[in-house]
Image 1: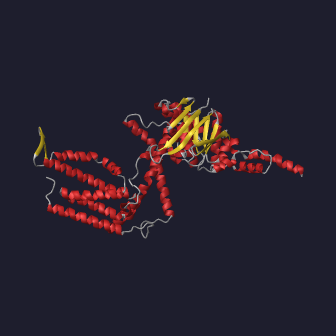
Image 2 (image 1 turned 135 degrees about the vertical axis):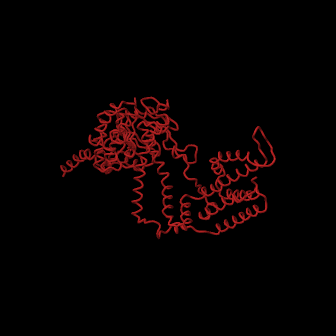
Length: 287
Length: 271
């Protein structure tokens, strides 16, 4: 059974006013338990509106969101429970930090779940370990941390709730290349270790190519593609027509293929080397 | 949810009232407010109401908007109306126990109610037809004489402009922070009073922090563009008085003279 399923999900902003805009347009899709789903789409394509319906921050104009087969709006009063099971990390999550110490901030979510202090604390420690925050940082004020550390503390605050589904909206935006690498590795380690479902929204095709099992492409409020990562990025021309692109390395291989070379569009540099080396060796032998 | 709050009241348009110089609009609005009080009888007040009706129609703003602006003062008007009803001389029209309503009281109540409504409507015309930037610009110019008294006119105007500019930004920020904390299970809706005040902490602290961050960024950006206060600063949009403004001023002067005439010629309405 899919962990999240949407049926004809539609969301309109400002309904009944002249400024009415359909942000999500009859989207039906299924996110499988345990998968790592990448979500891409240009600005204003409806990605953010879509994911905010997954944890009930926005209520659909029409259609349904099912979590483990149950409509999350069946009992509107219990929507808070849905938010504990579908954890959401917003863009620039460091802007949400408020407590006196980092560890207390990470505990905010678990405490809201009604856990005891001890239980919340042990979960917070574990979450801090996942994102690589060292123990000496935990007693500091969150406002003393560096930008990257703040980001990781904020992500830990959501991971500490131990959600079935973790949604991250552009978690690497504004980080330096090293910070991006480290954070992405931590997220995929977390996914592998916990075996839960992760949804990652990103504008970086390289990031998506590196970590996602499947990719959802949003365009004009519609789900334009939902397929294995390699299959989505093989449709480079279509993606470009939607204002997106494919990873640089994939593009090179796609261009080679257009010229008649027998290569598959690889997603990472390592895979590309594996594709190209035999080809080069073959040519060397021919000469 | 936050975005639904109406920001400012400016109603874009191209009516003669919109095209008037904001300085003239502010000056005339002040004059009208004064003359609403100079008008001591129904004859004078009728002149002010007639002028107001003309201005409202000319402004091209839907009349429903004006009605909405009156909604805010409904209660005050009702309160003064009822209060005035019982104070006034003249013939008794209705009495019960110690309560007594006279024809003078009724006329007083109506007179005061019309006064308050006119006040609100005149100021609504100003805010509906003038954008916030135009308003602060005009205020800066009008307050210039206060420089003699070492009032920092330019700085005050700049602060007002910046404050207005950041209202929508901060609302958006609040919305984002509320969503982020709700996603962590913050409960903003239920609980008693103290519980609710406490639940605001996770929203207010990040909001303060980000306001300061924005203030620093803005100060830096202004300094990078060599901002050094109002000294020698020119404006991209110069304010110009036109024939339209002259006509409006002349017309208003005529009505105001009429009000003064009525005040001298007819007996006062309040008894």
